[in-house]
Image (cartoon, rainbow, N blue to C red; front, side, top):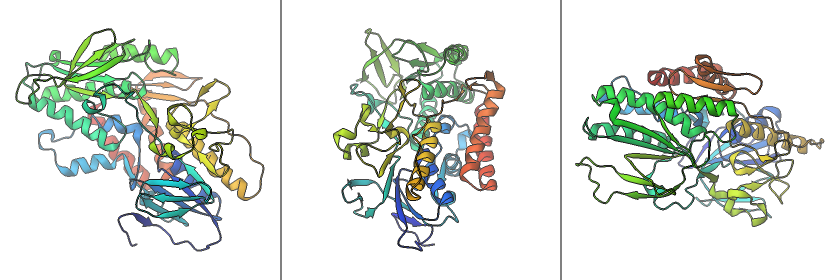
Length: 443
């Protein structure tokens, strides 16, 4: 198989007259749409465009951000590669043996909606009969001064590794009598999961570096009156209690106004990197600040006309997930603004929602090709499993709610189930076991 910098060809197109479906983004929605199209019909040629050559399993980012290696003081490059491979699944592995698919590693430069044509940043023209936009979301910093400059994000695999290494280096640099302060901006699902996992990571680091636990502080700063916006009251209260028991300090109704860097900061001196300034005039010092509180649609949405855009630049969709005003363009996943008529709220930006919408968009295209009646998209109520440090999680399955070890075990079984849905059996099992062996060391 020949490869070049910009594309990997899995199979050559056999019939030039079949329909071309272009999918932008290889996340949960994009991968599911591609797999359904390839499985359910032989009348389409799928072209998947993504800036990476792999599919990211972001539900385990918090695990990678706190991974503990066996030989901690002699961490090797191979350990980082192995860690990265637990959450980065090559497209070539997912689509190996599939017919009529091409992967293009590139980004979108422009879209000509009238001519149904895409121009990539590498000046490659890609025509389509149907387009599925599944480009996801990116971090929003809400124009808070210096927040982007002085904080870590958790939106990519590299972000997760940066957080892990940043905390590790912090213990290397600071003396055991010096205070260590980690602040997480945002008390949503990502912030709470990360806070719980960081506690275990810091406990391991404190042992290795003989750093007294009482000199380490982790805070969650949340602007709203409660954690986990969108979750049930049961999940909110359980989460707050669990994090408090772990030693995480939670500041609710606390909105960050600005972030500043300490002018006298010096790696060689015992000092904090910066300060978070709240609207109530309180200031909090930090060594590491992780921002998890804001998301907005990926930049590709700016290519669309204004009538296509909704809140946070998401693409406005109709009841069939078509991006208004286009009939051959679908918007799915985080980039889509899809309204739930039952709850009267936008659908949550979750993997469940993305997978459901990707599957629907693919089936909708198949029905259009076969000139069959298309039913409107019916969103399913999301279920949540929230890992909160150690072998502990909350499972809110709407009808059933439980917490503890069995919820933690269920979370890992859900991961295995997902891997099995996109990979051959032994590849999925091998990937799952590899991740479990690494992540369990911090639990």
